[in-house]
Image (tube, rainbow, N blue to C red; front, side):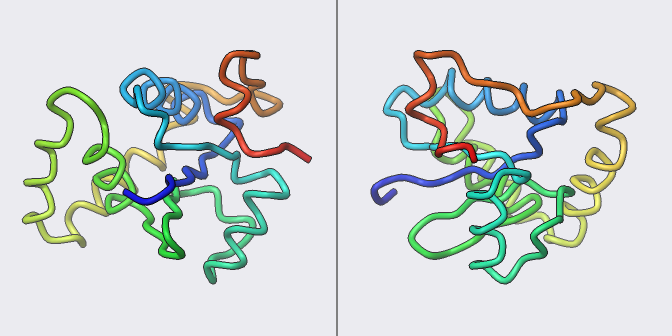
Length: 135
């Protein structure tokens, strides 16, 4: 992995915020930085990558000028985490259409299952350096 990757996530989604905490706990070398999709930084990165700036239905990984979305983004992240998570790379053998269908199903139900916040979560002072500037 180069200098690091940026994970864009739905900042008001409780499931997505939990996923960010999960990533941070398994990223001891601090490879990943984060920004809510709703932030100016997040929207700018989406536009730069040719994605809709109001698209909140996918987590996005930006690294080295490349963009990964949907199940590709999740597998890209898992491949860089500590522990056994890189073993999920075998799921790349599953056709993307099928992986993305499962991913979309989870996305479509995430608010109902885990809820939604009115505002984006604010990182703790210890983690603030891992988050791109919020505007």
